[in-house]
Amino acid sequence: MKFLVHTYGCQMNVRDSEAVEAMLLAAGHEKAAGEDDADLVIVNSCTVRQKAEEKAVGKAGNLIAAGKVVGLMGCAVKRMGEDVFKRLPRLHFAVGPRAFGLIPRIVAEGRYPRLELAEDLVPGCLSAHVEGGWQAYVTVLLGCDNRCSYCIVPDVRGHEYSRPAREVVAEVGALARRGVREVCLLGQSVLRYGVRNQAWEDGWRGEAFPRLLRALSEIDGIERIRFTSAHPKGCTDELIRVYRDCPKVCRHLHLPVQSGSDRVLAEMGRRYTRAEYLAAVAKLRAFDPEFAVTTDVIVGYPGETEADFEETRSLMEEAGFDNAFVFKYSPRPGTRSAALPDDVPTAEKERRNQVLLDDQEKRGQRRNEALVGSVREVLVEGPSKRNERRWSGRDGGNRIVVWERAGSERAGDFAKIRIVGAHPQTLIGEMA
Ligand code: SAM
Ligand code: SF4
Image 1 (cartoon, rainbow, N blue to C red):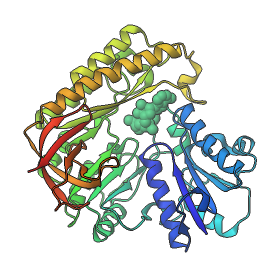
Image 2 (image 1 turned 30 degrees about the horizontal axis):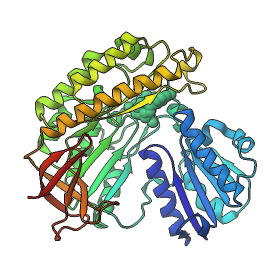
Image 3 (image 1 turned 90 degrees about the vertical axis):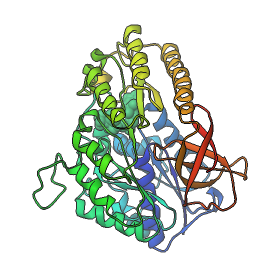
Image 4 (image 1 turned 60 degrees about the horizontal axis):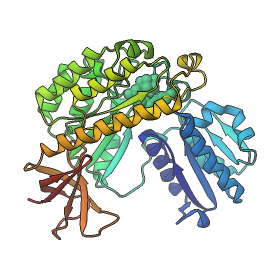
């Protein structure tokens, strides 16, 4: 059987899709070259915003209309439950975010329609990886217990659960033996690793995540370790010591702030103030002024005033973000904020969104210009799509670097690139 997986949403979904592909390949199935060639198309869905859900469900609907056998997996399935078959009456199967390990069995049995919302993971499903490539995502923390007022993730991805450290270390070791050089550890609030349940089996009482970073740093072949997403409360002195002691741990943190207004932060239940957030950024930059900090922001949260918005603007300037993802607030069923009036008009959300993007464009340009003249260690990704002679890769700060190919570099290698020019989201370089 030939299959294809389409993925919407965050890195967690990208990772879950990869695991599904690996399991289907291991079961003897083949990856299709395209939709026309596929006997089965699986759509991995997101529901964090209404538009994201519509995109994924719309895609599945189009495939069904074209006569395909379609499976839907991921967050939107959990949100809709049995209603998924009302939205997509001819859908073959639907599996929730923790049930993707059942897909090979569902396909083998071929009994449709079928809905699986199990919370128990199929053993081994988290460590299934597709062979090849030099970068890999590794899920270390599942679910989320934070319950931010606007967020549907805890409802669909379930309670926080830290995978045993032993299992994570073994998985990264296996990836290293296959040639993987960079791992990115995933969790909604990854610095809470080992907080709700013990991750280390030896009764360790210290900070579990920094210890995991130290353990993974010891693995030969792994050259870079990233992780996402972070929370200011996790930016401890021990984390800074890990950055100092372990050069493989990349000096980049994705630290979603959501708002710069203390009033809005409190309503969102984010558990930090503006000052605490900025103190965390200052701590990282005091350690290394080039430390890359990126963020997520929501505009148009219920009751967000012009003054609140200006607080977000000024926080973003003070934090000096290297990159920012800006989202327009979207009420999600069952969340606390869904009970509040969605009172910022769409046009105003659009305006605030654009203002922040324009600010970030200028800030990105400024921050990148400051790197002109420096030599970056870049993991080579390959030729750019538009121009074969131009190659691209990323530095430790996750910044995209583009250069004219010298000829000797190969994808998966590390190259030293001298920066000669800057754009808001890209550095231009030459082989050093
Ligand atoms: N766990 C991460 C954290 O809390 O830092 C983020 C997870 S969420 C999948 C990714 C981003 O989507 C959030 O950081 C937030 O900016 C945005 N988001 C979540 N719920 C949203 C909503 N209801 N409307 C608009 N954006 C939302
Ligand atoms: Fe959602 Fe907050 Fe959990 Fe992030 S930390 S997934 S925003 S509830």
